[in-house]
Image 1: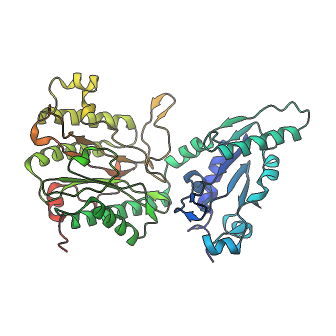
Image 2: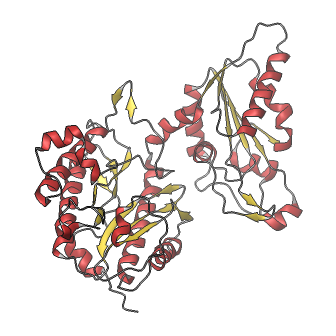
Image 3: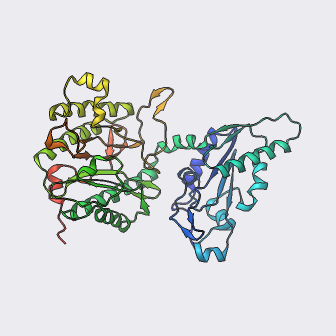
Length: 439
């Protein structure tokens, strides 16, 4: 018998309580992530919607959760031995009641008749419209039925509020259990990167590196990758979201690997860049050292009270200084920053929230101002420099070099803790590890 989520329902009850405290003036409706099925019988690996999982721990598709005050109602698939023969175990209503502690549980087929009752005379409906047309239609029909049942009460249309934004704010602050799982995800991710470094050698293909990384993830207990792995060698490393992973890694290339493992519905996110040959060239080492210096400075800068946006500004300042020293840009640093000329070589942000999704939920600005960091927030620190192969304005030795160094941090009471520190990033460390597996 498959049981409920590890650790029971206590953590999910606390999360629902926090959400209900903010939505007590209305009803919250959450739908599971739709199941991906191709040609009627080919199922893709399923992952529950992060916000849905956050408040329930329930991982099955075709399910709906309704929170109405302190009442927690679930709609789930019924047990079906014939379908379970093909698709696997289902909790059914009895299993959901036993392991997920709802006040009421109904078969999903009954949602059309029960949902209007749950909505009742609510003045607010906490539901994100325009995310799924079929779900939107179901909710709007239920709202209309609820209004008609109120008779001539003068009840108007309720206000719709995005529940996922509110859940996102809760998700931004990680509790001890979440941080423990995130640390594990980061540890597994780091071992995947070490495995990639060890097998790397001239002539290997990017997809072989990708396969080794993900093999190591699964071997260490990861349920799935947190996102599609980026494995870009040579000029491919200058493509920020390179996805082909099918090129040959050559002796004079650097290899940029951006990959993270998921564990307990939380994901790591690491980028490492290392020489295919096992030894940085002088030009590669110059750019790498510039990025590493900036990354370490930004991590040191992180602490409660610092604005999240200021981490990025600090990275820009350091990288522009490096671009000037490397001869990538010319002119006055202040003018370059004001005109944003640095975007040619550093076109992305320095970090993002991290958690159940690799680009996790949570506002970056609050009350019209850049958000200040607080203990329990987790995010990435990932500066980089990318010199296009055809950039005739850059020194020839740097053309086609792309470097990003990314770690995951959790804000502590006095600073931050790097959860991905076992993945080598110092030049001497990297050169010791790359190519270690000679098989």
